[in-house]
Amino acid sequence: MTTQRKPLSSTTRRNEASHRAILTAAFELVQEVGYAKLSIEGIAARAGVGKQTIYRWWPSKGAVLFDAFLMLSEQPDGEGVGLPDTGDLEADLKAVLRATIEELNDPRYDEPMRALNTEITHDPTLAALYAERLDGPMRELKRQRLRSAQRAGQLAEDLDLDVAVDLLWGPLLNRWLQRSGALTPDYADSIVETALNGLRPRR
Image 1 (tube, rainbow, N blue to C red):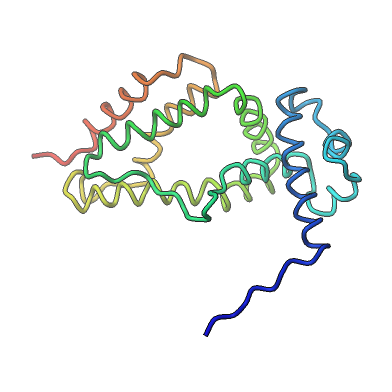
Image 2: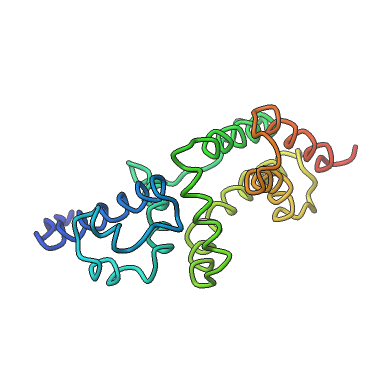
């Protein structure tokens, strides 16, 4: 027996359209004017809504920007995204870190991501949301890939997977945040090679 999905009401459709327009406006504006000059009023004007509509759904511009990132990370088919698992741990990790570098080097994302990282350090509520809805799920995907490598005998059985995640992704994000060096494919490869040389089980 199947149940028919009820069609969305006109009010629900308007709310969804306004919601998406607000998030799109916030992402576009932070690229254009920077986070310091980003305002709820400006987002409302760009999205064509009243600012009270924004405050009804979000407590701050940082929360709006965070949801904009979540919207961008949504998959069209609604499926979750896992890390590649070809059986070759080194190749898979290099591919993931190279893709991360491409995203961090993309000028469309650089300013919004830096703004979000800055806001998280000052807003405990936003930091908790980030940990629950984005960072936590992403860390679990990374741990799952490393668990698979453990089962295949490619990593030590007693390896602390959270420390391993930090060893692999931490240097890349630190260099990006501090602008302390170029983010290149070769750098991504060197992180993986250096980490795995210490993480592989001793023979």
